[in-house]
Length: 280
Image 1 (tube, rainbow, N blue to C red):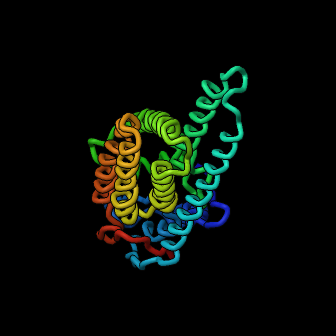
Image 2 (image 1 turned 180 degrees about the horizontal axis):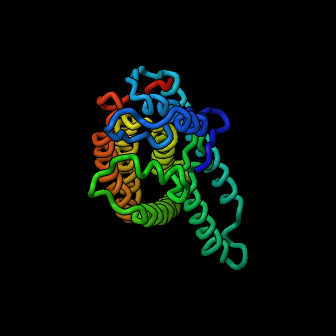
Image 3 (image 1 turned 60 degrees about the vertical axis):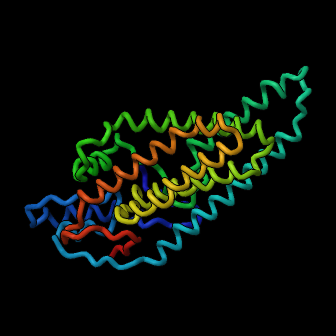
């Protein structure tokens, strides 16, 4: 993916290309051990090339950016869904002989929820883009980062996430038809989950914070996914069962993220800490 930053929150990944160019100028690694380079961890690359030790300084400012970006995205999505409610309530169900209420509005609602399910990062204030396996940069990352043998093949992730997107949209429609509004606990739960997931994409993929991504995927993405299942199930049992596969996958995915973290120590041989670290 291209180097991007959100409109309000800047990402450390914007120095990526200069960092990789610097690596090519200073030559190859002096160590015979191959270390995995974080996907887009920019300013750490010169340290890898020189085999130098890395100081794992806690980056409070970066953590504040992640928290702020998540909160701002959540507020923006709540406002967007409030606008959705206003438009839907202003549209008469009886129009076109009742077809608007029976067919048109449910179809528009499902399409809106599907967009939210797969494109929530459009509203993100960090670079939440998923890696593009077709780019030379990502191919290099895939080659250099050690991954467990049990990791599913790349194409499987596309199938998994496309299916989850469909299940999210369908279950959201079921909740909407049950409650009659998006301003309810189930929708707030899934908005929070989507925002946390987008921030995790920035942490893991854009900024290469391998350690912090482990903490966030377990205590953010994973827990919020099961909170969505609970909220949906208590409102509409069918919706809860429909969204359940998402939480099941997001119980497996953290194990994979953790295993990758364990397989990829820093050049100094230590594990990346479970907090945002400052790049130099």
